[in-house]
Image (cartoon, rainbow, N blue to C red; front, side, top):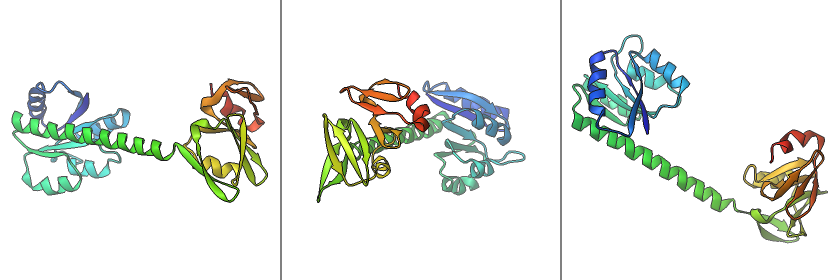
Amino acid sequence: MIKAIIVDDEPLAHDVLKHHLREHSDLQIVAQCANATEALAVLANQTIDLLFLDVQMPALTGIELLKVMANKPQVILVTAYKEYALEGFDLDVTDYLLKPVSAKRLSQAIDKVRARRKNAVTELESTANNTAKTTSHVTLKVDRSKQKFAIKDIDYIEAYGNYVKIWHASNATLVSSTLKNLLDEVPCGTLVQTHKSFAVNENKIQSVGTDKIILTNGSMVKVGKSFKRTVSGLL
């Protein structure tokens, strides 16, 4: 559902838009505002996907509103004046409609809104997939060579002087790294530090106690006093 608000100081403009928008079941008008100040109040209290915005309004114009909004939803400018079109598109509005607005032209504008939403979702999914691919392993120095470790196979890691022991399948591999540097290389939340010398794979936790964590393979890992609050929220 596309959540939208109408911002216009002319009641008739509201009525025309609402009449045409009955044709679009995936769009919901959640608020109607007579000026930019009212619109800012709505935007501060709920997430809005689309703004139908007039340009010429008292106190603060639609263009001025666009310039002060930090996180703009999609915007369709609806105005009786052609001369603001270039400035509007410079401010990344989705479309620019001239009054009186026809049902056909409004439908074309909403199709553009839908297309932008679809492209944004596709881009987010692509970014998430690429991130998952690039962070499923961590490459670390073992002796004089480099070795790739699957993060999902790591049970826990243990600081060991200037090195770190990576425990996986009841075996330990000594790698050239500090605990902090290794934690910085893996996705946030995958390995959780429980002690100044230990971090565990959150997906391998069996139970959590006040001073130790038991993993699914039976290993026990210490919990430091300063990490008790973090550890308490792991299960």
